[in-house]
Image (tube, rainbow, N blue to C red; front, side, top):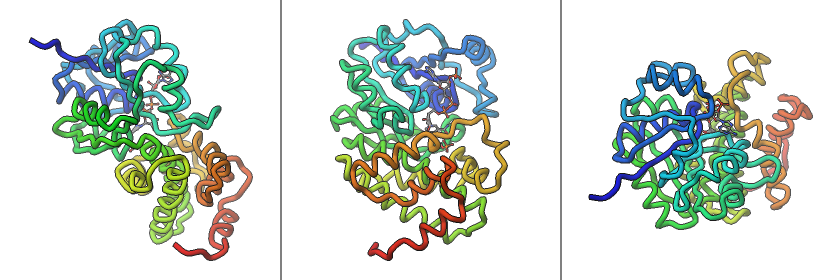
Length: 328
Ligand SMILES: NC(=O)C1=CN([C@@H]2O[C@H](COP(=O)(O)OP(=O)(O)OC[C@H]3O[C@@H](n4cnc5c(N)ncnc54)[C@H](OP(=O)(O)O)[C@@H]3O)[C@@H](O)[C@H]2O)C=CC1
Ligand SMILES: O=C(CO)COP(=O)(O)O
């Protein structure tokens, strides 16, 4: 009889808990959620609820919880569901415990600010003996955890590894498409957050649905240009991680990035103060990447300058509308 596979999800926040729940409910692997907050992990084990981030969702009995990193010694697949800026430190911290054959999947949507690197490049540096890939696409943690249908993309440099890992992690309600383009998948995931902030600004400033549609289309053009300049494919960002996620988070108040944009325009930060807003971290580094690759990204640049306090929203709009006319 073959030994059952083990999947460990690192990070007991919204997305990590949701991923672990869906894997445990639908897959055949043993699934462990590895957190670092002992009282929270004890609470999750006892109540099978993570009300703070997944209200009303029952976590499956088959899901195991721990703070003990030694569980990584037998893990075949390790999903890193921590914020983009924490991926390097988490990888370095857990590295000594990893099974040498473990495949690593980043679930973060962002770019490392200090280095300008995509997260799989960060993981390749921190964990050079492992294959690292990126999971990204439209799906709110609470929908995933509740068993609503979700589709995402999973990219590794090796398309075969992407397909094998996507097959392991997919289930009845979570369908994962394999990709051999980690650059495109990660640029899509990081940039959609910056553009979702812009869409939130459009909503908060009451600029209208037409403006938002224009922003989504022109934002997609920006993502495509940067992805291609960095060695990825435009077709990838027209898929789930990119257009798909931009349509979702550029039009929904469930998105923290969108809500942050609304709050910027309305000057009301109460609803988003404590939440993780990845686009805030990615905006300026995306602008720097665009400059270093000689790529034009006017909307993302405007968001970065608004976030840095260099530009007001009205002035940003005026600048975007009065740029020299170009072809589409
Ligand atoms: N929420 C969502 O709907 C989705 C989120 N994502 C992406 O997933 C990533 C995580 O988001 P989300 O789960 O929502 O965020 P949360 O803030 O809910 O959770 C983040 C988790 O990461 C943990 N963490 C932070 N730093 C470290 C570290 N250095 N070592 C170990 N653990 C750490 C936190 O632990 P502690 O609480 O102890 O600080 C917390 O459990 C983001 O990049 C996001 O874009 C992707 C798709 C959907
Ligand atoms: O990426 C997400 C859904 O696909 C979650 O979006 P927020 O981080 O903006 O909440």
